[in-house]
Length: 314
Image 1 (cartoon, one colour):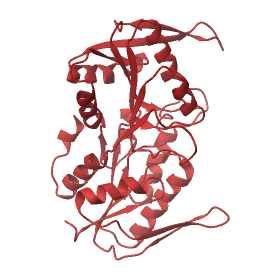
Image 2 (cartoon, rainbow, N blue to C red):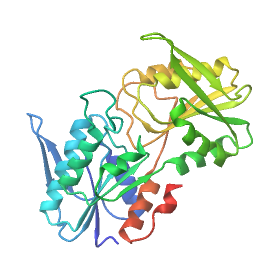
Image 3 (cartoon, helix red, strand yellow):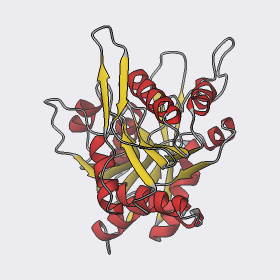
């Protein structure tokens, strides 16, 4: 496999790319990604890729626009270097929340990004836990939307073995996801119904389900500013939850997120390394990171060897 396959990485998540290469037992491709003083990005591929199957590991997380441009420019460089196929492995797909016209005269940026990725030369896209599944339909090339659930579920089973737990969806939209986790863990389900009593008026939390004297695990696809998460934790505490944990596929953790989590009643937040933790002096003691490297490495191997990847969707 190593004779035909090459894996490259931009600057968004090089540690994840290295872990994927270790799982596949192949070296990381040689590429220089530089930024000129005016902000322009320059890419130089440092090895022969003619006729090779290329996989680019690049999350379009913050700084979103820089990382997206890096991905597009790397793909363009590889296409012009006569790569046989180019697969964009985007563990976290930025702009995913702009997937519809939520108001008049607003863009559908998820579709725009899909067009840019396709035009730049991608033959296939691999991603994890798209914020909205219909984004797959924005592409005219194959999209494999993998789930981080197996990685998270394995950790939860080991950590809470024998304890009475309840999976909690922080809003009505995430009920299906929480129900799937609850089914696999053999536990109960609770849903927080969040509503505003008026413009700029504090939200009222209604809890559907029983959390009293149980370990409550809040489940979401991403944690951004952690406002919804910490409000949900407060509601669970008020309803008698014994301990409160949270888990999500993508730890965006922007703005006041870390401070809010540290000040909340949440004991631990479980995320994956689809987005690297920001390099700053924040206290990350409540954050635990699981790796999706093995999951992505297996997907790459199966795609390269023309095997089915459907079993990875469970």
